[in-house]
Length: 88
Image (tube, rainbow, N blue to C red; front, side, top):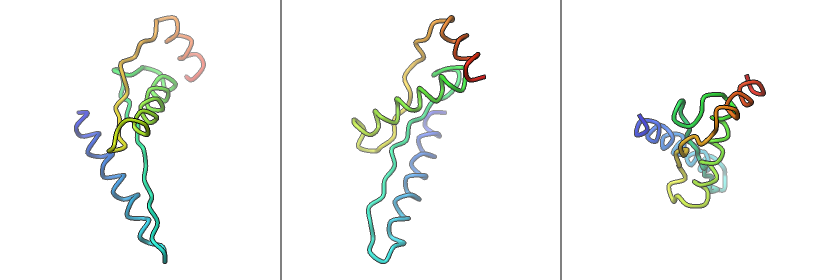
């Protein structure tokens, strides 16, 4: 479920933040995470990477938590076929 994916992303962020305290002089480290899932956000690896990338940029800009879920795939069948040829 998307809730489980968000919880997992939050765990990743917690580990990344903790890494900042490992230095002699602690530093702030954060991560913005975009989540995409098939088939909701695409079928091919290229579509999923694009959806996750767009979600990551939304997380950087809009979401204080730094986690965002991809938006619905709005690709035509022709575009999906082209993506499948290009990315496998």
